[in-house]
Length: 129
Image 1 (cartoon, helix red, strand yellow):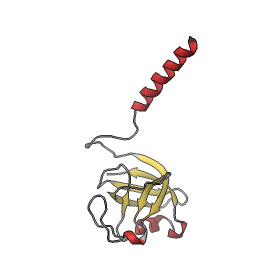
Image 2 (cartoon, rainbow, N blue to C red):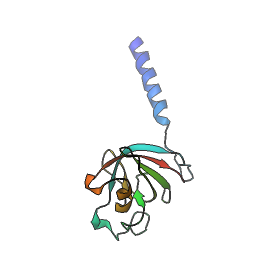
Image 3 (cartoon, rainbow, N blue to C red):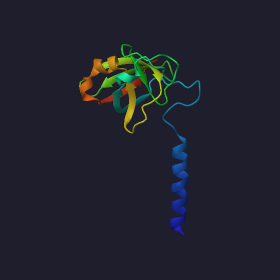
Image 4 (cartoon, helix red, strand yellow):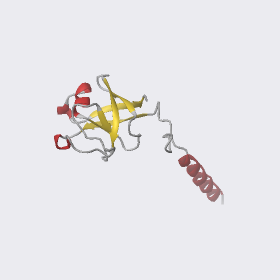
């Protein structure tokens, strides 16, 4: 019987905890200050001049990025953990959809904080606007 009580309490606690979210939700959510750590990649050349999920045309030369959840138009400071270099990008696309990757940067934005030959960078991101 004590095991049943412990199991019930564990399930109740787990459900309560899962209802809490560290990410804002809803259309009018305030994302300012939201931070995340993971890997950044950059767009392949074949995506240049193609339409993004927001309807904008992607160009390597602009400081833009893709994120799975952040609203279009959000300004995000991306910091390369290894060298401390930062770049500010505007979210205008969705992705990346590969485990561990949190943001896809335009080629020029990636180049400002790391070398494209690396392919991936460990980064932290922070929504600033």
